Image 1 (cartoon, rainbow over the protein chains, first blue to last red):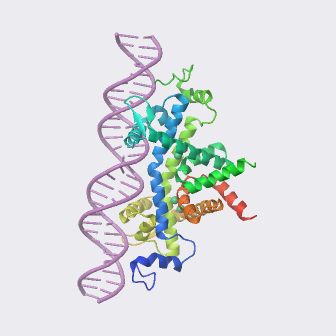
Image 2: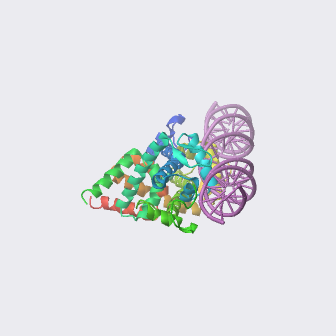
Image 3: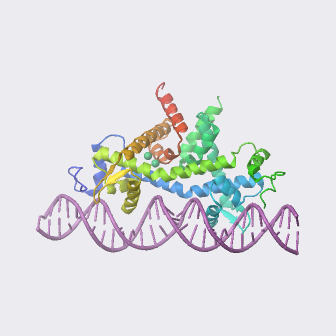
Length: 168
Length: 168
DNA sequence: CCACATAGTTAGACGTGGCTAAGTCTTGAT
DNA sequence: ATCAAGACTTAGCCACGTCTAACTATGTGG
Ligand SMILES: [Mn+2]
Ligand SMILES: [Mn+2]
Ligand SMILES: [Mn+2]
Ligand SMILES: [Mn+2]
């Protein structure tokens, strides 16, 4: 149970991982590379609420003229005080404007974020539909997947959507 | 700013959403369906740590004979006390066994979960690779996406992987 | 056999994001 | 003009998941 006993001859704690990687099976990312992946997931989680809220707020405003907390709560599937707290964070982060007892509006930054998220959401949904999934499954899975799709992967999704729409 | 003013004639609060859906643009899930999607994402987030940990623990045991907290911490990209707390939750939930100052082992339930997660992880990675992504991007995005892929979507991914491997 | 490096634990802080209960504001109906 | 219903806020609770600082156990090597 001591840090060098499994690696053999190394005296330097720095090269433990390199040693372990060559000593074992071929397919495994370096520990640090792996850690970056998990870090990226944690980062995505921190922006997820903001992204989903501004997207929904934008849609509510377009479709019904205003975004009321009660409607946000219903569509997010949470209680009103939860929405209140999250809206306070969005305001703190400069994504929305609001006055007490009034509906919510997007700032410029909020609009910009909403535009990006809506487009990304649309691409992910269409990609999943192209795989043959029903709309409800596509929508539900996209709601989670969208936050974990890198630019490269989103581009790949977009290519696949175009490829299956154009020549079809 | 009152709950019925936009829907027209309804007196019954229950059918607000149906009314709104027909009144506006065609493509938008019902509020409740949408809420289920967000709920599914929140549920996935609650099991995510457990899934990634048991998967990593299984791999460490297979590759080096034991799973030490310090190695988990390095690969997860977090500090040791974070691992300690998460392992305590895993133990509470019956996924791992451990004694103080010793390494970690999976229970039967932990093994079963790890098996499922590893297989799912592999399918998602291979699917992304099949889209033409580099291995590092595929691994990193898969680390997040894997937790938001329903059974149906996973099956679709698997079909796509087989289709691109077999005839190629 | 003992010291020291390393691993592991504990304590305590913090922010997020959920909830309930209870209060306050607004507004349409009477 | 009032009032009741619904929307919004506030207060306070909780669990999770991250961190730092400080302490304790382990086991190897001198
Ligand atoms: Mn989403
Ligand atoms: Mn979305
Ligand atoms: Mn993962
Ligand atoms: Mn994984």
